[in-house]
Image (cartoon, rainbow over all chains, first blue to last red; front, side):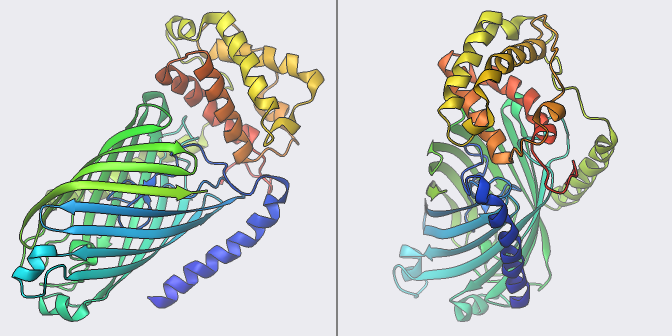
Length: 291
Length: 161
């Protein structure tokens, strides 16, 4: 798996070299239209709040590069989940991400004998490549923008999650996303298919009752109220593969606001489904700064 | 959730099948008529509205260091006339676009995708200034967006990716 990640970084560097040479005559950054790079999803890829989209995250258009950093906090019934990370993108073609998810068990940690505020952390390295289509500009075609991505995840509490029944503290998700903006209608639709072994995004490890990849489905719909403001909803199905606790689908309803090209704020109501104890509803807030 | 899984794969596959032949078709005209009547045209303030929007567009464009270098001062009045004609035809305002096709009029300018998007931003500002509702703006922009294939320079000469 490491070699795949290394290969993706190497490919990006190779792509970057001609892109920068070409960019000498034009601004090297900032060619993308407002909000068309999406926001930061919980594992750091460009997308909605829960699901990756086929869009590339920085403000780069062809021949440019871009990047952003984000911080997300989700307060649910029992837990506090934070995610922060950085994204680098080039040529509106490739994005590379590094992020960290922290899952603070708060009082549940104390009840389980782990200690109040026992926190599980996960590091995620991601790469996404746009394969075809342009979600925004190809308004005369049905073909969506299609991208393929990978998320390599490493959980820092492998001992705990394997004791709970997971097979590993490390795992790799593979996904394909198709995103289309129906501009005349102001409607953006996304569908993502993910192959994963992750329990609760990887926070509870990888594999369990079986050690196979599960095919999961994610979808987003967003409506543009203005060029700065979008409202939408998402769903993300997940494996239910740990014997000790049921896992269900996650949902959100969000509002995303672009303060300017360099700053966006997303707030959402999330229903993350059952996480160990009970159904986890709560508030999601995310700030992204980029170029 | 198992029920969801199979249609998801089929839906993506089906979408690809449906859309594949579109690539084989000839490019659409540069100014497709998108409205059934003149209601949308009136939302833009009719012909006078389009003249105001185009005047404002060029105030923004000439102040926009990303793209003002593309426009020769002596050609601007003609470009404005042609844009008004094109927008008017798209909005079913009873005009006929008489200018060159987009590929010819932008050949050899070396326009990048970022430049194209910069003009879109300036046009959005001009439409905002003239109180064109967001949804109406997007209908015009959706008709103009495919022009990127004719306007944006492809270094290797291929029109498609």
